[in-house]
Amino acid sequence: MIPRKITESLRKSLGQFPVVSLTGPRQSGKTTLLKNEFPEFTYLSMEDPDVRSFASEDPRLFLSHYGRKTIIDEAQRVPELFSYLQGWVDETGEPGQYIVSGSQNFLLMKTISQSLAGRVAIRHLPPLSYSELKEAGMQPATIGEWVLKGGYPRLYDVHVDPVEYYSSYIQTYIDRDVRLESGVVKVSEFDRFVSLCATRIGNLLNLKSLANDCDINERTAKEWLSVLEQSFIVYLLKPYYRNLGKRIIKTPKLYFSDTGLASALLGLENSEELVANNLFGPLFENAVIAELLKKSAAAGRAPDLYFWRDSNGNEIDLLEIKGAGVKRAIEVKSSTTYNPKSFATMDSLRDELGIDIHQCEVVYSGDTTMETKHGLLRAYKDL
Image (cartoon, rainbow, N blue to C red; front, side):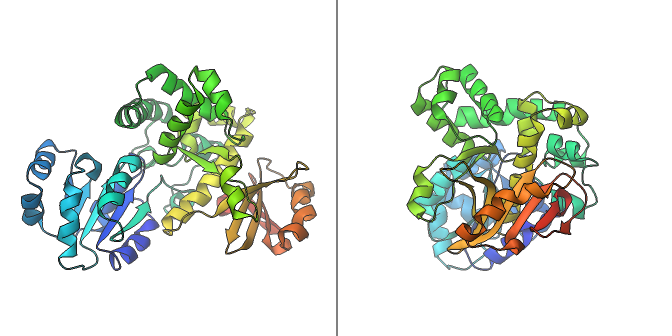
């Protein structure tokens, strides 16, 4: 098993809350992590028909039979259990009683918000980050391979071919879990919608265009996008404004939570071909953003990442916010060589954003990290 950085955050949460919820996309490594890192807990999966039947038919007896220190995996399949779980954990109020896990965030969170509010710490496990692979000595050999494969653990545990893996993943997770369990009935339109989202990576979200291209109305497109976001398939990066209210109403940018799936949806099969393709720039930018999102998830924090775009067309790919100010400004460049002009926009906006050169970074596809007179040039391997 490749060690996961979220383990420390999970243990800390178990010392503070009666219940810890771990969600994430299917095959991101939740079951492996929970079984290996928390052997003191009894593991139960609601995918098992017998266990699921026991839990749904007699929840009180189920909880009494297994007691506390139990992992309930794919818990969203037995939503009626949560009302009983609330009373059970409230008997003692002790921390670390249960871990509930699931791959359907929109179903699990609905149940948790109704029954376990104030009693649960919510954590998310994305696919493997580059830094986790690097520490395990399993990092991809090239930048093209990193972007093309993404971070799903099975690709590294048993060396499955990415083309075969993602073909199966799209049919099972997206078509079965996401589409069916969220009530989507327009199969071909939904599949096309997901694929078209991959073609819009790094672009400002245009729901009207997506809806028109899929022959659906804009309301449906908005609902489907919400499903994809809650299923950890896509991520919407919001624009940064000092007026916090504007962050909500202005147009976000569309990214995928992992570039392996996005590459598969785009029909990319070869890492060398990918690097030469005009899609490499947006996908590399997506990979960098996904890496930072995965780091936030591992620390148990909500990502405080935004992009900057002003009325004059000046744009910065990423702003990492801390408190009321900018902690880091980051530009992402797919070039393997350093160009001082990469810092130009950040140089021109330093006063407006209240930052200095020590807060300016350019992440590029080269191998050398170094300080420059404009800021830090960071190799993608050192994220």
